[in-house]
Length: 360
Image 1 (spheres, rainbow, N blue to C red):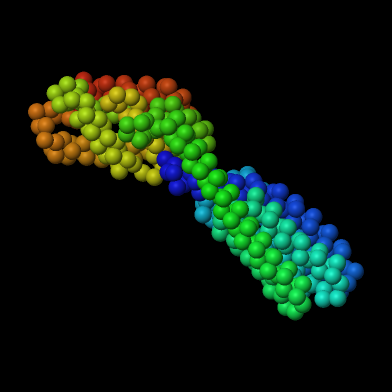
Image 2: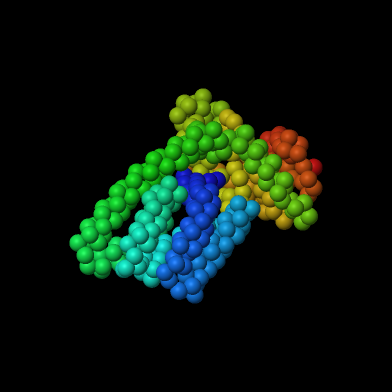
């Protein structure tokens, strides 16, 4: 189940890589143009070395972006974010080196060109990198701070003023980046809230029936059939109506929330749980054998029995009947759910508080 933090991190990384495509095109173009111009006043070997470093960086960055869009699950979200920060840092450093090594003290037109490129790239990066403020700040400081220092070291009054104006521009860009960042994060959080409401049960916080089905179809379709068992655990609480009728709906809601917590704590990381409706729950498990689904079901049953012992309302014995439908072959959602429901019905008829299995 994706948390708000995970959702936010995934969206931030997705936007960084989507925006990175435009940033790479701009970078490749600018590096080529300024290299061609600076050849007029600087040694070719120095310009070529800087040009080659920039284009190799963009080429590696291109393949990393291509890999991300092909299979973002290949690496963790944090790893993709780290790679983006590294590429952006190196890109900023590249423009910083431009100011250090290719700033002409004699030719003021070429000075202006070297000043405008890092400053302009820093301004453009507000729209491409500031979704992650650390990424943007790394790029901005490494590209513009060396320029500020190099301009100031020229020693003239005009250069001192230019250096001060560049510092002011940096502060303005940092503020703009922060405002853009805040707006984008608000949008991501709002989208998560809307997504959560559409895919989760409002009372217990588990997935709803529709989202469970979507995940089932996506998961089963992407999993090799060989040596894999697909199971649905269907849980129907025993005596829940009596609890509701005797102690009120609040007591019933509290019990449902507690049962949901029990289910969450019993799952493996790869399992998916949902509230089917009323006092019924279901879990999707993919494993090497049916034994793993049986272990999860038994954990839940044992914890519900322990929870019953803690209840003050001892006159109502809240319990659970559990059915497990499973298949070793490709299976439709409705067919496997029906098998799990039938197994649960058998568990109830055979005395409640037990687990029954049905293969399909």
